[in-house]
Length: 620
Image (cartoon, rainbow, N blue to C red):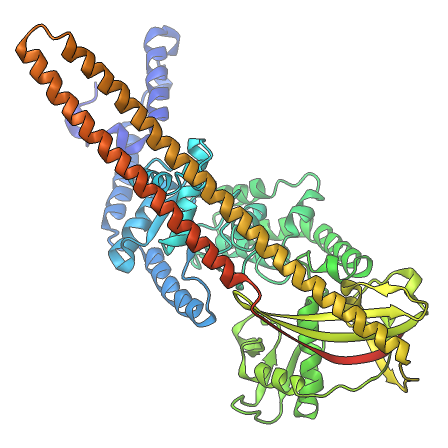
């Protein structure tokens, strides 16, 4: 028999979880009940081996207890400080979305960040959202939105909406588990931190997609935590970054790529490498094998996707896809293309332009802008100075371009020679016509500026605003004009005037729709408030009638006095409710006046228009 005092005692709950303990107990009962399971002489427990295993476990416990500071959490703190500093410079919201794999890590990070300057600025999001803070956020949200129509009545959905609104309006950081990777719209946040980086590319895209979505006004920055001492982690990141292009220009394609690779369970293959490989050589060999299996299929699929998009679809479709042209030539949208071509025209001999990666070398100082390399699209810090609309050099280009006076002329447009894939209707090829460009400035709630095209073919067919915008994306050359006839000039001016009136009517309709929506919201709020107060008054009236009945039917003085006091309290409460109803009506009237004042501010106060130029055109 083994002597108990020879062995250190351990609490099973510290070593196994509840399911494992239950399984151990079941096995123990089975062993007790079955004589067949009794150990033979060859199966007698090796006490020395048990002592060795216990000592090993104890050493792991001792090592864990010696950890006082988490270097990864400290790195997160530094990353947030740097990222928030850059976010403020570009004018983005001071918001960060941090993803973890477990609720324990989530809770730890919340406590750590609160102890290091972020107290009261953090909200958590997970599968249950049942913690005290989430419940308080929900109750406050329900109260604040009682009359806004935002409450769905579904507790789980309302809880999610409340946490998102709290993150948007109050918190700076949301620490989330994978539960937040789908279904949330967080386009007001432009910083995503993968504190725990998953192996599945789709999961990474889903995470980033919470912020990188329609309505996002800033570039989304993605920070990935990789253990540089773990060779397997480094190879996983290399595979995700280099092969799936999750963190560079090609984005949004891994679903398509992986979906085409039959027989490859990517995440399971990574898991097996972690389980079976122990040395760098083994890890490297396993990843080389996996990469070799994937590489040819990935490259073939990527090439096919790029060619299909860039050769088949026009610029409008391309702008809705997050793809690159080639590894050395990045995709730009129509506005970046116009911005690029304008820079080439204005800067001219002051710079040398490289079309392959949309960069240029400024050979001389322009205003306060120094000489050096400027990049329309930057992939890393070493690329050069980001060339953006807000940059002084870009402002110089725009100012110089705006000062150019454009006279009449004739332009021959060549869609086939255009860098962008611009698709024009087939029936326009070979046709010619005339066109007028006007500017329209509208001073209303905000100052709005529009460029309005008015155009016709020579046979009288009108061209839409959208078609004219695509026409000016095409390559073209200037030729000697024949001159617009008085009839053509008059037709353009009359049509341009109708175009301006139509745009102003569109703005009025938009503002009227806003007013109607606000009016309906106020009406529903008014209806709910009044109905609620009236129901309370009806309840009080019923209670008053009941007290009056009790007074009439009282059999003792004590009962009559008690019922009378209760009646007086109810009468007083009824008066307060009536006063509250009157106050609510005044409040509603005040909100209506405020709504009308806001509508008045949105009404068009002043407009200014100018005909910029009229030209002849031809499409070849």
